Amino acid sequence: MDLKMNLDKKSLIQIVILVVLIIGGAGAYLMQQDGGLDFISNFFESEPATIRAPAARAPAPAVRPAAPAPAVATKPAVVEIPAVPAKGQAHGKPFVVDNSYLEGGVLGLRMGKDVTADIEVKVMLPGAGWETPAGKTFKVTEAGGPSAPQVALAWKEEGQKSLSEQNFNNKYSMVLEFGVEKGKKLPGKIQLSLPDETKSNVAGTFEADIRGFRIVDGKPDLSADSVETLQYLALRELLKDDPNKSLEVLSFRDGRYTPPDSAGMNMTGYLEAEYRLGQGTANLQRFQFEKTAGAWKVLRVLSGNQLDEAHPTKTPGAKDSPARMLTYLAAKRLESDIQKKFPDKNIYEPEFMSRHSEKFKIGVCEASYKLNAGGEKIKTVYLFRRKTGGWALDRALGDREKVDFDTGRIVKR
Image: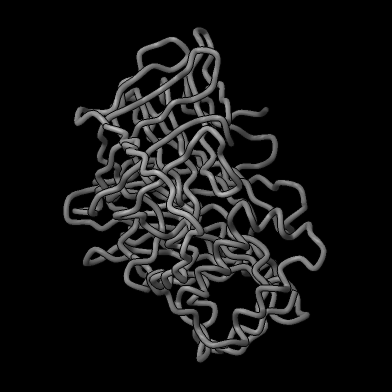
């Protein structure tokens, strides 16, 4: 795949298209098809796309009937959605919508306070996943059709941790109306009847939290707390020095964003990007992000032989937890050692696990990593002592050494 990324000719939305297709579920599917993702290059050799409202349809020519038909009074079918919080029943159990969300083109109506819902209805809306369907109405009859949204019903069986799920593409009826967005919330109302054995249904109003990456007024919403937002920023960073470079994104890994550790601090994020320029070898870069003034930005770009844990936004101090300090010190030493011994190697899949004893003022941090993407894990255990000024790295333990935390002594394995 050879994508000529010409920033002079493409809009931000076109970058988003690339991110969604390469990173999203569609990308994994399309890469297996004939031609892969080569067709995307057409986006970057043409003028930027412009989003417009649908044009008004021209009225059809008047046709005079041969003979007037007798008038028949008809009353249009009107679906009255109750103006109460959405509720119903699913698989014979009461279903009350406790919270709802809109993310990536999916409306989710959930019952339950835990991370895993007790019951959830998901409606996969047509159109681009980064669009917010404010003011839109979706009506589906039992006949369905190719453009009808897919509906998924998920529920928790007694004694099971994972949810069971049933999908519906047709033979269901739905009226779904969205209101006007306010404060990253989108009100709406729904009446949905499913064709399962218990005739599951839900009707009423909801207020969905808007999540995930999206486009607002033709620009990316960089306030969205989403891994896709970080992916977009990383791709833009990779292209900023040379808009015409031939870029192939191999993978984005370990994307995450975390709340601040303390008051006055900002949210931070992290992402790894592996990519290839032209026909060259694969490159690995690590991106650190920070959310300031309500918008995400790239804070720092690390090379493949640098570690996120060795370059925190704030250097750990005496008030931080021992686990944080031991990890930081171990990462600094590991990064330095690898850069000296293997200057041309990248560090893959780094992991750190620490343990300490305040009683014996001793601690360890096990660092595991790879020097080749498909290679075996290498492990190094660092020994720490707590001194007057705080924790200090003593040395790396030998392969047959370990710390006995019951005695605070170093013993043979």
